[in-house]
Image 1: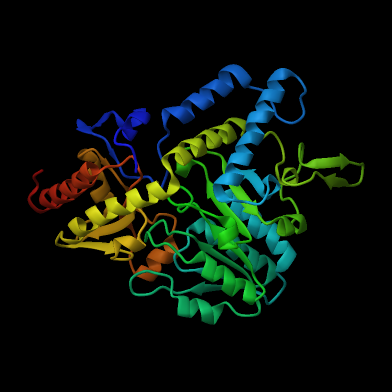
Image 2 (image 1 turned 90 degrees about the vertical axis):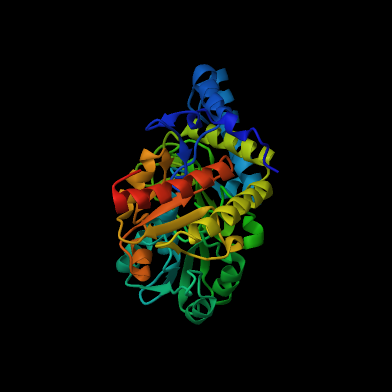
Length: 410
């Protein structure tokens, strides 16, 4: 169970926006940071600020110890076999770009196939498009069902021998749907393909076990799970990471530099060129400590209860269309919607006047919105520090917005 006083850990929530109490519902874009994470960042910069790995003085050793302790926290958090399988990156986008560039060079040849889905974020579309162009491979999309879920019959048809990479989001940033990654990984492996997963929208909201999922690579960002921006993770099975070449070069990632060639450091360091985001990694470790204290299963259950509470209220609003599964049990805290006759940006602006922060636009998922035959949507996304009162404020603000644009009154 999520403790009732959880909001006090998040100082940013205690403010007014346009003379209204802030209701922050843009958590799919980025989450707020608890004091425990802010304090960890302050402690590092006030007491331990030094570069990692190379120095032998006290500050460097303390910084290195904290940095590598965070790597171990990530390992346990996603149940990787060893810390060598945990690479720190700038975020999900960087992780997926590295996967496409490095893994692509290992496994993709002319005429091979890469499979993604219609619901992918641009970060899980564009790198594979570029790989397909570079290698003269074919990019194939799995279609969706009428409710916006992944069409597993279509997936079974398309994930066949000749497919070398399958890359699918664990949870959609627009539809809120959770995909059956283990089933997809089984299909991929049976076809001889590598399974890559975009975990940006799943890792903050549910228990993730990369060994149970049996994915080969898994990417996620820290800023979507209460950690700072600019830090993320690429998990990879050791066998694949050893085959893959680094895509950035410089200090830290080398073993020895000769005049005409270089050799790489052992995993995971061969992928981590230059001075890393030390504070970000330490902040990520603090965020993981915080989430573990709450319990990922508790977070997932709480968010589902919130969606179960608010979804029927939104569905009852005349002229409001919701995209994605109608069943709250199949939903994350993401709810994308449109109001008949209103542009999503107008809706978002009007909701902001009520103190309710939501997203509006294509959500970096233009192929999906094209598939849905819409140009943009509004999107409310909940996290564990949101409440049923926040949900009611969203509904009230939507109704007030409709009233305003109908009659010019709020």
